[in-house]
Amino acid sequence: MIKLNYRDAKPIYEQIRDGIRRLVLLGAILPGEAVIPVRELSSKLAINPATIHRAYQELETEGYLYAESDGTIRVADARCEDGRKEELMEELDSVVEELCALAVPRDELLGHVTSRLGVQVKGDEG
Image 1 (cartoon, rainbow, N blue to C red):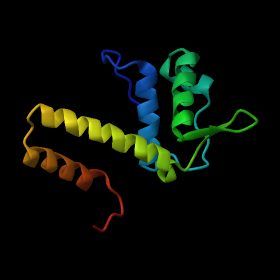
Image 2: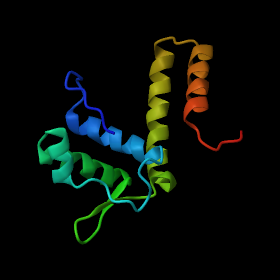
Image 3: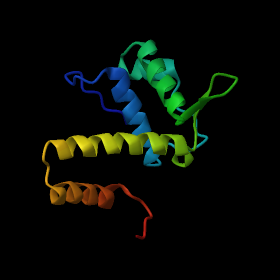
């Protein structure tokens, strides 16, 4: 489920986008499966449908969702999107550069990344 934090500085549409992206990547919503329609989700979350629409548009641009001709929005197989992978790697490069500029010790940075991999990578034997 998507959790919204109204006290967070991050806009609501970004929280929705990030929540749906997380559900897709964790396999909670499978490729080809329809996502909740904009109006239904806006009713459940008690927010403006335009906010949901914006989140869905961004996810479509990122390759996580696609719209069918009848208006149904479905999950794409985003795990295979090389463009998104490259975009995220560039973001990672920027974050690492900034952390290095802040003098974060290499061991601390590597330890953090290693611990995240242990938690989030599924089916990786190496």
